[in-house]
Image 1 (cartoon, rainbow, N blue to C red):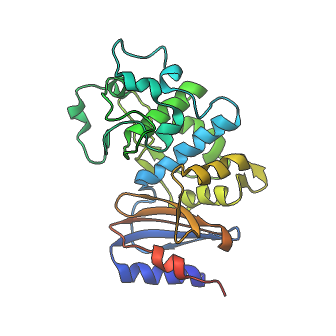
Image 2 (image 1 turned 180 degrees about the vertical axis):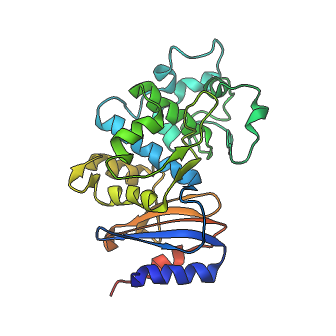
Length: 284
């Protein structure tokens, strides 16, 4: 085990909680430590959103999607007769940064009983929602925004989000089992419920660290990797500006550290904060 991974395991024991696996990719070498027994695939919760960002980026790279496109234009043939007028202002970009107008935690299937929604059509349910503010004027973090983006991927590509990514990301990067929680119509929720190996979660960070290239094959444009950093599309600047990362409920994390050529990912349940140790680490 590398000195760095050994340090993280010791820190995990110190901060407490249940850590299942921690993966490090350093200068292209991948290594995983198993700290607690658990299922091979773990729920990544909101780290799933970074995979939706990647699908959107692929559509952007292909010229199939503009970030300033209005949601009502993309779904023009599926809109209900009556909608809140504020929907006219919502763009793809607004959904990417949680500036849609949904209330905090809206359509969060990790916290609500979805059977109480009164419908099996989540997309129409969203379209009938009265927005709390004009999109783009403020922000409120919700899973609704990324379910909407999951449906944008399907509308633009003709494939469901998981099928789209299997061909363009999961298979090329050598992912193993993967499952994504879905709505009653069979569309991945996007925002959460992505069950994957910790090692495979880390591979997404390596892709962004390398500017969209995996083993010499370009998967994403360097432009898109730069856009995600500049606009804060789920990979946020953390660790005193040294890293970019995305966390998930109950202690999941994925981050990449450019100056160290390092990616770190972990799955946990109630795991403590490892970021201070990551911030203080210096390679010898």
